[in-house]
Amino acid sequence: MTIKKSPLIPSRSSSALIVIDFQEKLIPAIFNAGQITVNIEKLLLCSNILGVRTFFTEQNPEKLGATAPAIRKLIRQEKPLLKTAFSVRGQTELWEHLSEHGIEQVIITGIESHVCVMQSALDLIANGYRVTLVADATGSRFKENYDIALARMRAVGVDISSTESTIFELLEDYTYPEFRDILKIIK
Image 1 (cartoon, rainbow, N blue to C red):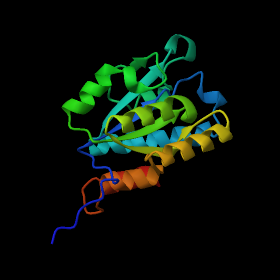
Image 2: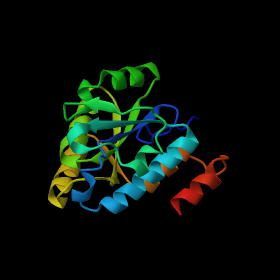
Image 3: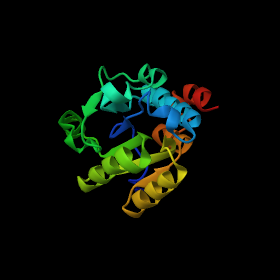
């Protein structure tokens, strides 16, 4: 008898992590920005160890600044995926990469939850991707907007998770050689 793995649990080989618009000038206004930064750092460090593809977007960097340096230094992608739309929908380079590499599930983090993150999640769902939102690595200026965005995304099938849950789902088994390095990051 074969027992299936849930399609909601991300697999490192068929998943990608996208950090959406975590830009310098936006961050100071974000509710709980310090903890969100720490959680995005953990996700990126673990994704690098596990070989998960990572991307980052920037919305109007001339006005909103570049991606936060603490986050930028952990992303292997050379340059940001620039976008004018709030969603990643218009970022053809991203869509081509997801398709070419057999990505089925997209893990998203970033800001703001109720604008760019939510619109991206909705468009990813509409295009057949399973989407996991890492709730404690995502934020908005106002908690009310964050709460509404999470409820709306959950209602349309976005899987809401946490940093630690996502990391352990990608790791999958404590006997894997990466376990000790991952454990150092999440503790």
